[in-house]
Length: 103
Image (cartoon, rainbow, N blue to C red):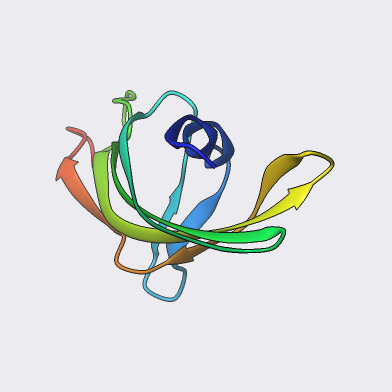
């Protein structure tokens, strides 16, 4: 998988710690920077470790959040293409960077 594949595949995926309330769902309109820092392939399976920095788009009455850290993406080669099956949080953490005036 390439950076462009990861950009496309991560949209709609969720990571974080539901117990702490620090959960992030990647949205299509977020600004993102992705760097692949490691790839392990084993036949039709691949683990891709990325560093990602992303930020939510400002919305009325919502805080702006920034997330950054490492994720392990588990891919499998299915029907002639790499398919993202799972996102594992290694160090990704969301942080509020700007509060809404009403929050």
